Amino acid sequence: MMNLEVAKKLLQTGVQIAKEKCMPCSIAIVDENGWLLALHRMDGASIPTAEIARDKAWTTAVFRRPSSEVSEYGDPRTPGFGLNAQNWNDRLTTIPGGFPIWEGDRLIGAIGVCGGTPAEDASLCQTVIEEMSSMIENTQI
Amino acid sequence: MKELTLELALKMIEAAERWARDIAGFPCSIAVVDKSGTVIAVHRMDGAGMATTDIAIEKAWTAVAFKMPTLMGSRWLDPRNMGKLLGDHAMGMIGRGKGRLCFIPGGIPVTDEENEVIGAIGCSGVPSGVGDISDTTVSQSGITALYE
Image (tube, rainbow over all chains, first blue to last red; front, top):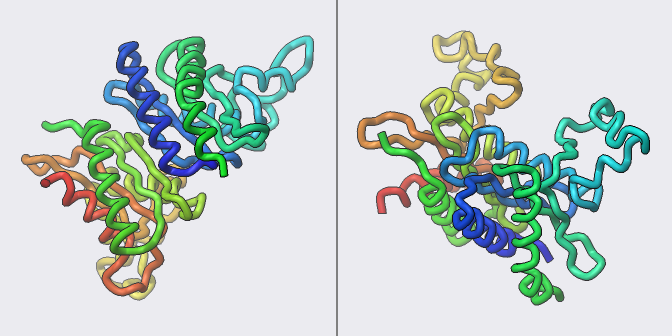
């Protein structure tokens, strides 16, 4: 079950790891429908990172897969083709750095990170989810 | 000039959250923005409506953009003030700021020792008309936490 308490712990863990890596970034947590639950922008993280982190988390939650894989929905010859032209939601992004949070086979939310390179963002997401996996299971009712 | 850091923002939000939960009794969203109007931290409490996060951010943005509480701006948009000095030009404000302008009470700027605006706090989720409890008082409790 995703709630503010879980979201805060995910953010704390994420900010801690990002500090160790000296990578100021924004981290967003959304619920299973993509609505923003909590967002932290670290000191030194640039202005657009807040919105991009939220966009990544939203894309991940609504497509139920990492934001980097969303480009597979496009034309197979030109991955991601047409997605940006759909214009049905300006939050859509295919930049890596968003990961879904599963509780068993149920999606409970998503995390989005922006601040480093796309690869760094993605690895930070994965590290946070791995570190928190025990807690997410514990919260299962 | 003092900077509003993530640590300070979280201190404000945690205090406002406690106040909203324990005293106001309404779950709500609380946002803190820096002097550029960009979000530093947002929390949506369990049970608060999903639209409240965006409204809280918009209130904080408006408070920092106008360097005054949104409660004051809401007086401009009050139709009862039309024809008075206060309300004459105000309807043109609706939809400004790329739709971010939000003159619902609940956003308060944060100032430093030299009275410079360094950011703002915004809250959304508390219904209006429940006596002394409102979005503004939740935001105020966040500001108070800065001086503790």
